[in-house]
Image (cartoon, rainbow, N blue to C red; front, side, top):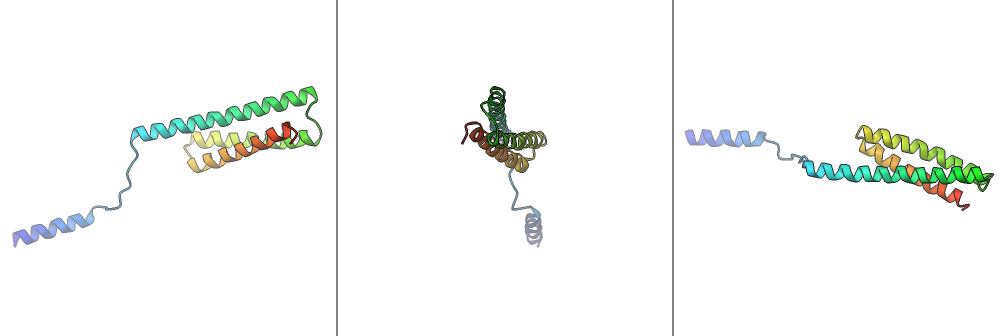
Length: 119
């Protein structure tokens, strides 16, 4: 009888333990992800800065004007906002917003570079 009670108690306690436990990533994994995120962020910011420099140079020399300048300016405003959102999301570890803002910034920079090049 004692054996049956002990077995019943063990089974009852076993039923209380969670079976669907999500694993917490190891610190090495988290550090690796953070390093990749930092490099991606730096690449996006450098891309924006290069675009912005090319835009300023083009406008200052008179090579970019009219509709081309308007398109480049709109892309610059969109990229600037997206980079700002990306920085904020990164600072608060908001991955979903970070990814969306990074995508938006990349698209805006690509559009701006196309406008600067006259495409």
